[in-house]
Structure formats: C-alpha cells, structure tokens
Image 1: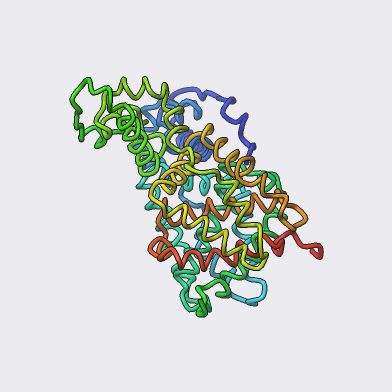
Image 2: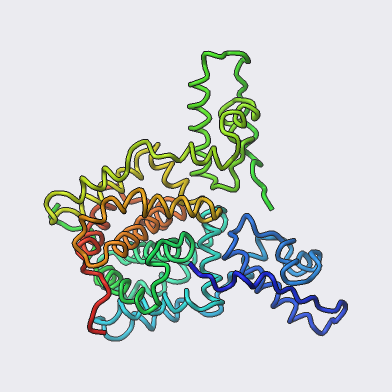
Amino acid sequence: MRNCSAADARVIVRRSPGRRSGDNTTRASVLAAARRQFSELGYDRTTLRSVAAEAGVDQKLVGYFHGSKHALFVAATALPFDPAEGIASVLAGDPEGRGERLATLIVSLLENPEAGDRLIGLVRAAAAEPEAGRMVRELLTQDVWKPAAASLPSGNPELTVSLVAAQLLGLVMARYVVGVEPLASLPPEGVIELLAPILEDLLSGASSPRESR
Amino acid sequence: MRNCSAADARVIVRRSPGRRSGDNTTRASVLAAARRQFSELGYDRTTLRSVAAEAGVDQKLVGYFHGSKHALFVAATALPFDPAEGIASVLAGDPEGRGERLATLIVSLLENPEAGDRLIGLVRAAAAEPEAGRMVRELLTQDVWKPAAASLPSGNPELTVSLVAAQLLGLVMARYVVGVEPLASLPPEGVIELLAPILEDLLSGASSPRESR
C-alpha cells in the first residue's frame, strides 16, 4: 500500500486571489489534488469540493475548468505518455526477456508517483463507477493492447491481453488498494521478479487453454 | 458526490404491514437485495434506503435489523461456508493437481450466484471503502489462508498467499467488475484452465523471487 501521500492533504498553500498569470499552476495543482484523491479516496469519496479544498482554490473555479466530476476524473487520470508505445517497445526485441521487460514497465509506472496515482485512481474508480469501468476496459484493450497484440505469438492475442490485464488489476488491488502483506511491502524489484515469469508464460501462450482436457 | 439511488428507489413493492411471522423471509430478502446491490452498484452507491426499496420494506426496518450500512455490508457479505476448510482440503492430497483444484474452487465460488455476489461485493467495496479493504485483507490472509499456509511447501507461504490473493482480486476485477473481453465471456471451465497453471506455479514456489539476479 502506498503511504506516500498520507501527509500531502495537510499542506494547503492558499494562493493570493486574482493572479491570472497563475492559471496554469492552478490547473496543475487542481489536477494533482484530484489525482491524489481519486487514488487515495476512490471515485465516490472525491468531490469537486474536496479537490478544490486541497488545491486551495474556489470550488467554482474547479467547475469552471472541468465542468463535472467525471470530466475532472478524465483529465486527472489521462496518462502522461502513450502506453501503446511503451508496450510495443517491450514486446519488440528478444522474446526471451519480454515477461521481465513488461513487468518492469508495469511496476515502474505504478511506483511512479504521478503515473501510479493515475492508474490506481482509474482502477479504484472502475470498481465504483460503471463509466470508469468502461474507461479502464478501453484503456486496457483498445488503447494499450490492441496496437501491440499483433506482435504476440499466442493463438489468441486478445485473450492474452485480457489475462495480462487481469495481472495488472490484481497487482493494483492487492499491493496498492487492499494492501495484502507481504506483497504490499515488497521492494519494486521483488515485485518485478514475481510478476515476470507469470507474464512470460502468458505472453508465450504457455497458459492458453490446453487441448488435452 | 454521491448520486446513489437515482434508479434504485423506483421499484418499491410495499408489503402489507404487520406480518410479523414473515420476519425471517423479510430478513432474507433484505440480505439478498443488499448482496445484489453491493455486488452490482458497489459500496458507496448502495444505501439502506436503496436496499429497503428493492426488498420492499421500510427503511427503518433495515436500520432496525442491521443498525448501519457497514453492519448490513458485514451481514450481507458473510460467506455461507468456512473458506479455510475448502482451502485446506484443496491443498491436502496430491500436490500435482493443487493448482487446478484451487482454480476450480475459486471459479466455482465466483460463479455461484450467492457466494459470487458476496465475494464480488467485497472486492468492489474494498476499492471504495477503507474498512471494507481491511475486511478483505483479513479475509484473504487471516481467515482463508493462514490456517492453510502451513501445508505450503514454498519458502515463504505468506508471500505465496498474497500472490494467490492477487490472482483472485485480478480475476474478480477483470472478469466480473471491469469485464475485460474475451476473459469476461469465457465459460467457467476455460477460466479454470487458464488459472490452474498460474496457481500451480505459485503454490509450488516456482515464482518465488529468484536467487540469481
């Protein structure tokens, strides 16, 4: 479980009002507060009001920037990179190390404070909110995996993709949301070592439904 | 911002008042409604009011039976069996088939309408509600696995347990909550076949952190 930002919410630095030139900074702190709250509190408990309070701005301003909680959620959880690109470069090259490269990519993203908060916030929201569930489904299948599925050797790349997605969702829930020990306290390298062989088997199709059964 | 019970409150089939002999039936329908809503709507969107509406009883009666939403949640998601017993019998016997036996147990529980709703409701709530997260953590570690961990051959049974928990959480999220395809539409036997070898490797300690790295 990430205890990185237990204290973050406490520091509310109020900005002097009317500094129009600070718009971008204000936007950034609203998004940072939203990202942290969606990740730590989940979708339902995060409100325009609680985000405004943490960012030290008027709630109306958050409404003005983003319109609705859902729009704020979409903006806050937008990934700061193109996931398809990362996946494609992981799957290219020596098939031997693919599982480990993919595990390293996934764990690095989750351990990165900004990308991690976005991904964990998305997964938590998916459990609470059908619309967020749809977003996670599309992110995992369309945006992230479909472009990369072509390079998978298994007979059923879509199935492989959904199984890798299950591994990602399970890791997020067990380590970062529920905090099952000792997995939650393992150093990132330990998690990569555990995840790599599982992903390796999935990517090579070793875990496809077997014929003889 | 909770927009719970937008639709929930619509179906109100009021029972004729004063039927004291129906107490057990009423309790059962309150719990069934709660179980369904915690599983379908998640913890935050389920309210004493929405459960009362679906069960066709007065909200006060639900409060009288259960006191609070949390108490209702605990009662509704209590498993109708002792999970430790099932796990112990799965792990006993021929080590060869353990992965498949455990996969069969997990998938059968999730596919069973009543037990499945309870487990899925628990996992969804864990993503929204810290107290439910604690319940899932304890269920997975203390109640379910600690009694069985002794029969695991791996060097670190607690770690094995948390990795199996991650598989369970990933399966629940991917197949039942987010609905990642084609995993979500696979017949139960197909899921068992996919899950079995992963669990087999975890139980035999094949996925423990490696020395040479």
